[in-house]
Length: 447
Image (cartoon, rainbow, N blue to C red; front, side, top):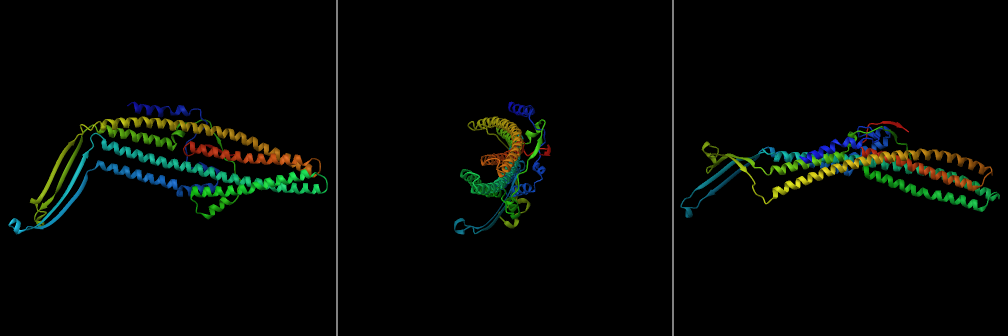
């Protein structure tokens, strides 16, 4: 009884644990649809059908369901059919009788255990709870896969955005390098300025092959995760697309249903229920088992008269089977079952604590990253203005190359930081989707 109250206390106190968190939502499985991204929809649809981990989890559900249905067979009698035929002849030299017999026998046997103390019932409920746990494990795999697909897709678009930035900066630096070389030929700048302009251009050019390789590697990662065979989808991934901003999350509180929706919590609850029924089955082993055995059929030494009334046989045998002593096996089995319940309650509480921590970390990450991102976007805009001014002044001969080079480096660094923060914001949003157990119904708006 104390284990039941421990579990009840953990579930009752759950709403107080989540009070004050920054999310008021009801879980939903297709939150990414608010992004209006057809490529993400196709990737997730392909992954849900073809990913190897998903297929394995689905097969585990089928195995658990078969085990559950098999355990339900204990509620019904076990019926078997036995039939035999013997043709034999005795020897006159041995028995002084020369005789031929054709012996036939057909019987139907039935055995039925009457589940008075719930041993079979608890065993069936144990298998049913494990079946539910396998379904929750499948949901957990699906949610993790969706989060991973979205994260890897955003990494791909971030790399493509970085490639575009590198190419734009290379093109701009080529123009500045050519201008610097022309000025050097005319004696307007030093050889150091020309060499520095060329060095900066070569450094930027050197980063492009590495980014292109990373893009190919990222496409291969998505291809493996989603087991993609659609050439059109692969072509969509290869087509360079800038990374969009994730949907903004407006939050003002949280309720316990968000946490309870996580499949790992539901799985832990189902596994705890299975352990409870396993303990019930172990406790039922203390009590006797009531059996009914029955037999009906025919037997005869003359096969042609097998089904005549006088050759009918039948038997009904009620029985009680009570294991009075088993060398403490039953006692230790019950004790082990109780220890497993304790561990199940501890595991459930641990999963709940981890869920709260995950959501709190994700919300803090989103808030901090968004603030950094907004500040970096403003910095990029200002640095772009600075670079344009430095470039124009340099063309007119009103400033030296050092100011242009400094502005170029600062702008490129800020642009790369902006893309990385945009990716981090997407990753935190996807992590929040996973942490809340499959998304949420929120007030969403495009940033």
